[in-house]
Length: 231
Image (cartoon, rainbow, N blue to C red):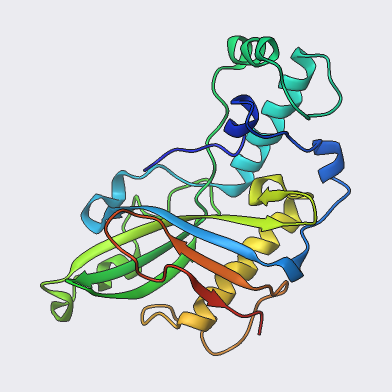
């Protein structure tokens, strides 16, 4: 799976970092919407090799890295870094933690046709995939013979008036988890994947928002620039 960190632009000095103390007192502006970006996939037969994705763990890793980094440079706020501060942080802490990919979707693809069969969230610290996923087993049905079977992984970003807010930066942690559940609920209710059994008929999103889906993989435009309304 591709690796990226929302903290990289801060350490590359291309973007300032909002104070995490500020983030504790703010919330995403749901009227501005959210982005779900599927930027990587694996073939279904390689799914068991994927490491566990855990939003709670990633949330803690992001916060801890920032707190330690600010201690190193003796700062109470993120802001902009100079080159010396960047080097101090990297020397002490190494590279920042990767983002979590807490949303995934199973698809079948043949030529220009592609269809989503299942959408889920990887919110446990234990991999759902290591023991065999129920939907993945069902994709071995003969009716899917001849199709390429893919598992896409997506990250989620919200906005407020001043910042782009990765899901891991949203406080408190329980609210971040609620937003993840709401995004999953909206995706399932709107796209109605065949193999999902819950959330298709009933609208379960506690924090509805407009969702802009982006597919930035190199060989598929499936669902790219697809918009989902809040209701």
